Length: 307
Image (cartoon, rainbow, N blue to C red):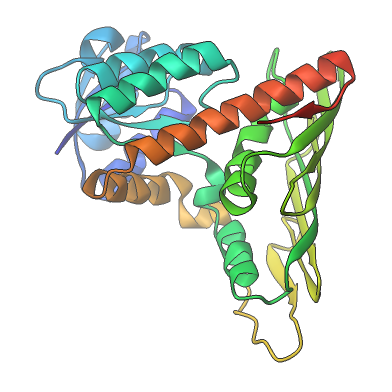
């Protein structure tokens, strides 16, 4: 399978290095900036290109690693899928329903594989947390607290940048029909958001995110018979199991050391072998709908109920 990388910024370079490490056949690395394209191509012995549109539809390319800026992602996904390419797309996919629907409809129509690289799918601590929950270590989840922070980019919005990652995991575990109430605070160099999500057959979730602060993640999940906690301060998943249950050993390693791009690439290749385009598109559209609902709640000051 021949692969093209589109978008050769920091994220694209990480995927170029991971693809080389895994021995994948990357034929083209495209970026409007010639220097960036050449830098990525050198990492995976590919040919550089400054023509992203042409690369997306190249006849001898089977799959695209889409790491372009978020503003152009949906249009490029639609173009690649329409020409029969499997796509790994950097997250977030977007926060506007209309263009997301068009792009995802192209994926459905072409019956190609789509994998959106939400980091929660590849981060070992979040995988272990869900395994503990599935094993019944804390009983049924009743309350979840998620607190994330990181550096701010110009014009970045905490909800748009950080919420999709967590909606991915929450929706897969508890369904995609919560009530959402959001508040935000913005000033130069800072974007802060606080959300409450209430799932009909699941937990109450408190989600807090700040862009413009040191990078940190705190996850807490309280169940009917215990608690699971994780903090990047110590990178240890702490589990208080239900009586009579055996907790899996904590994952003490940093998710960075595991190589998130390499993990995402492995998941992407698995989706190509076992396509699930319809379910994937429905799920990703639900995430975009959730982000749009959170933005609307923050703007209006009213609770938004997802269908």
